[in-house]
Length: 492
Image 1 (cartoon, one colour):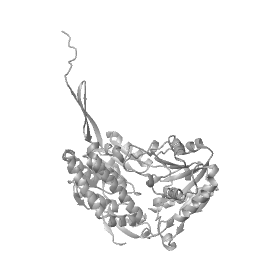
Image 2: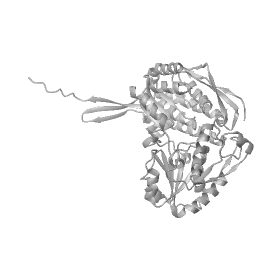
Image 3: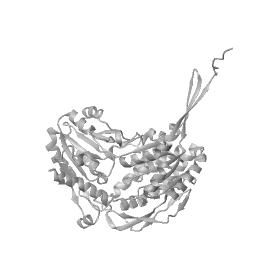
Image 4: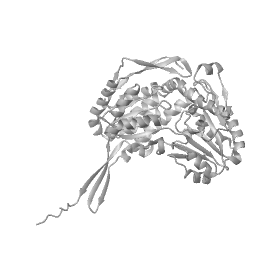
C-alpha cells in the first residue's frame, strides 16, 4: 500500500481544469492521513462544463455506433489494466476492504461490457409495416446529462450512468461525492480520454454545483443516486424545464425469514450476514431489517450470531483477514451510533458481533463494531429509518401476512429478500412492494447487471442496469410513413 497523495482536477472539454480551491479527502481508517485533494469547483466552472457538453452533443449524437462502442471498450481495457491501483486508492479514501473495492470495479466493468454488447441491438430502429404504410420507432439521444453519484459505491454508481449515456449518443457532466472523489475521478478521466472533447466532463464541489447541474436549461436529463430528501430538491430544481430523470434513492430493505428456512444451513446464514454487513452496511440495497417467523426466532438468532462471529473481522482495509473496514465518514458513524443508542435506551438488547483485529487502529479511525439489535419496537427509528451502517435489527413476525405487512410498512421500496423454501418464498415475494426481491440471497450477492434495478415508492423512479438502463438515456421517436394520404373532406 502506498501513502502517496493524489491531486485531482476537473475535466472540461477534454482538458484538465485547475480550480482555485482544493479540498482534502481523509482516510477514514486513519483520519490523520490525507489521501488526496479534489477541486472545489464553482458554479461558473459548472456552467463551462455544461456548455462544453452542450456544444459536443450534436456531433456526438450523429456519431457511428461502432465508433462509440470501440471507444468504450478501449476505456474498459485501460480500467482493467489499472484496477490494482484504482482499488487501492478507493480503499484508502473510502475505508472499505480491498476485496470489496476490487469487487466494485468488477461490477462496473461487467456493466460497461454488457452495455457495449447490447447497445446496438437495444437502440436499433424498429420498423413496422402495416396496412397504413410503415412506421419507424427510433431511439434518439436526449442531450446533456447531469450525473450525480454518491460516496458508498462511487465507481459503479457513476459508470452505471456514464456507459449507457455515452453509448446512446448523449454527453455528460459528472459530479462525484466529496466523500469519495478520488478513485472515481481516475476512472472518469480514463473514460473521458477515450472520447472526443466535451463528451464526458467532470466537476467537483458542493451544493451550488449541484444546483447548477439540476437547474441549467441546457441539461436535458438528470441521473442521481443518493438520498430521498436531496432528490426532492433536485425535482424542484428541474421542474421549470421538465427534465428527464432517473433517481435511485434510499431504501430500508426488509429480509423475511420464513419458518421453513433451515437455520442450520451455514452457507445460507453466512449469505444473510454478508447481506447485512458488506461495506459496513453502507449499501442502498443492503438488508437493513430482518423479520423472522416467531416459531424459529430464538434458534435463528442463536445461529445468526454464531455465523456473524465467524465471518466478521473489523480492521485495516488492507489486512488479509479483514472483512469489514471503517465507516466512510464521522457524520455517518455518529448517526448510526445514535440509532443504536436510542434502541438501547428503550430496552433493546445490543449484541456486538465479530472480532476487532487491531484495537489501536479501531480507536483512531471511524470504525464501528457491527451489532445486532434484539427486542426493538416495530416503530423504533432503528427499524423504520435507513441506518446505512453496521447494525441490523432482528424482529419476530406471527404469520406470513404479518411479515408482508411489516415489510411494506415503509416509505421505501428498493429491494427486499425472502429466505426459505423456494415456492413458499416466491409466493411471499409477489406481495412485497419493492423494485427487486431476492430469494435466499440479498444485496450485491443477488445483483445481476443484465436485469433492471430501481425502486418503487420513495426509493426512486426509472431503472438502471439491463436493457432498460440503456433505454433510460433515449427518447422514443416515432416516424410515420403512410402509403397513401387520405385528404380530409372538402365540400364542393
